[in-house]
Length: 489
Image (tube, rainbow, N blue to C red; front, side, top):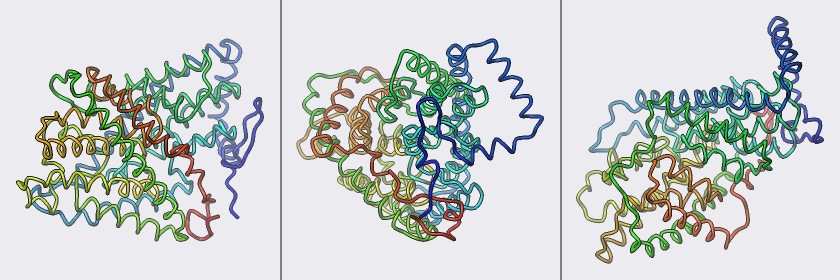
């Protein structure tokens, strides 16, 4: 059975586990570079104590990770424009049966034959590294997930960029701590700060990034940890925000006041998103087990790519992260759910938007799992936001049609985003703050809070399993495993 040192090593509180590949990587540094770094580290140890230096490194890592988040977003956007150029809005685009499949296959080739290191499911790997005490990550983690994720998402992967950037952030934080010889406890804090800063930078949500470390990574918080985390997440979010021209990824135009008479409907939306979250996470679990059971990585890539391509061909709105689509839908362009689709010819049929939204809800988890678990490198959070937006549209439009109501579907799309993220990821506070911070819409804070809590509560009534629990990966890779010349364990 192949043995993955990153996943089996143990450590004492005073001595972090050593990854042999990291040790070997450090040994290959040029003598000149190593000498300069040693002199800098020596000077630091003599003049700046560890704890004050931690806060300096929190700022430095926040700047670097915020910049990395901007670069990742920009690269994905440019690749999407190039690949998706020339698509026709009024009918099906057959190229969509090829492009997403090509993206998954190319990512698989890049990971297996170029990187020769499994960088999929970055958040899961961070959690496992923290659990077993591996705080020294390879330098390659500081950039490799950006390259791989750009291929996956630029070619249509229906997932997010937050998993890869969190892994990049953890790598940056870990390597800064290693270079400057911080003690193991502070190295763990720097790794956590880096991961949280990655989430903060990619969503431009400093509190969301902070709560990610609390609810998902489950880092134990002390006063030093809290201050370092807040410093790094605020710096990363502001850096990304400024570099992107001080714009939000989700545009929610107009004034959206909280209307108390809608509260019963928001409560029902919370119940609906809770049950949908059970469906969503259940499909994700089963599909990952299915992909893990494939012995040949080429077969895994092709099956996942075909499923992803079929879903995107039917509903091109599933292409990529979906932030632009969510913005358009929340601002009134509901026809987007069938634009560029073979179903566009049915536009004008009174039920087509509702039926299409329902079909997208059923397909989204299959598309996301194909993007994340069949060889692609992507994240899990953005798909839940997209699914929540469509769930809100489906819920409001269906009730309006059946009962002659006038529910503001845009508000329900917005609130639904938090509902599905809270239930599917099991992180209600993170979902609450990411949703409102991404849009800067705080007037609907109360319904977002209530829907998140209800959705999370519904999920907890039926399962106590954490979202990432099923990812205590059943397969572990060695270099030979990644090239398909050995077997998975």
